[in-house]
Length: 344
Image 1 (cartoon, rainbow, N blue to C red):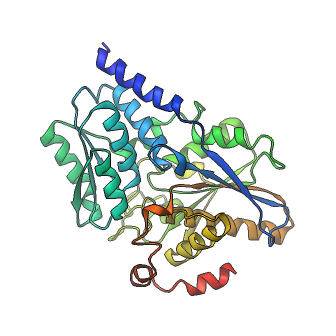
Image 2: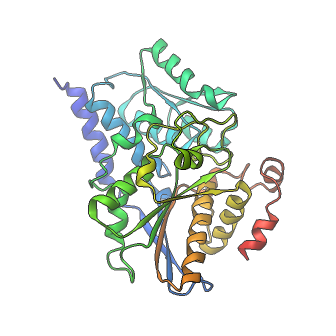
Image 3: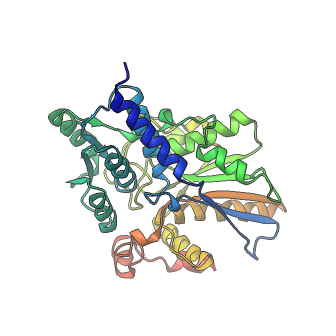
């Protein structure tokens, strides 16, 4: 039986959704690619500042509806940042304790945002410890481990209900090429790519889904091999995307193509996009933009026209000490100049 607090909590989350207008779809053109429209779905404008606001909202509703979250339940999540920021936002909205289990290398600004929303940060040195440490804390505190990597794809209604796929196609309806040639997406949990791929098939759109994967992530290799036991001994350098193991929410069969993107190419594309937009995108958006340009090059070679859509996942203002710090990039990522020359 639903308690008054559960009804209150669900109403609070739905009210937050109603207060938030849909995110913007930014269009721009590049002279080198005539007849091709470039679109960015700007998820950085959510109240908690990233694409993960949608996921956090879905995960909280899923946990409440399943009876896993009750009044006073501590919420624990394994996250490198943006999901934790968004979940901390919703935990504060509901008056629940929140602990983010994250790598010690997480961007300082994200840590500050989690604490701003009243959350705690629990650091691990090995990214592969995120899951076991989260489970341990949940057991000891009698809390709920959100486990975004398992529940991302099933917590989201991929058929509609203003999910990101439905929103993109609705906003594209009056554009010159309303049905995109390709949607480009990077994968963290795999939940967003699953939502996009399912929605494309459900609606019968003639749109391809390309997923871009950073270095030191196993999604690309898994897509080719289907070996679920694949793992990497190090984590991704691009915060929020790429995983050292195959996550349950990553669904390879809804994806048409995958591209592996070098980290240096990601940073070069991120800086190029800053010049185009006049504002700083996050690094994962750089990965997305690099993939978008690869599709555009192929379309140009074939004489094709059409629209390409990707996600502006979060703002680069969260990364002043890392991806927008040339010294840090040189030490952690390497020489990006060859990729910058290619971008020219």
